[in-house]
Amino acid sequence: MRNGKLFLAAAMAFTFAGGATYAQPSGAVTSGVQIVYEAENLANRQSVQDMIEKLIAAGFTYIEVSRTFLGRVRVIGYSATESREVVMNATTGEVLRDLVQANNGN
Image (cartoon, rainbow, N blue to C red; front, side, top):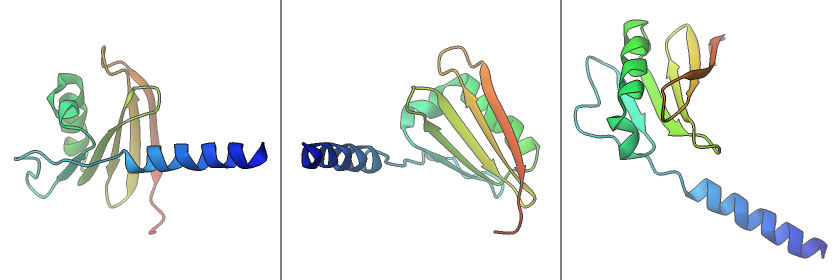
């Protein structure tokens, strides 16, 4: 029984780890800012584009856009001094979490 649970856990981990593919649409690199999308359809959402524009205006130079396990949109921005993670409702664009952490040089 225990071997079955271990196999199931390993199979699920492999499935989730292998499922993330990053696509970067053309025009995603603007003025020294790199934007990485997990899926092409995330780039088409207006609420995501608005959040990316806010992060670029705040000085973030590397931005990752992905989905969470619950289907929400996660936007992570990195600058020289801080990192910021914003989790939004994919449909309404409502910000559910906005976390800013100072970079310690690592």
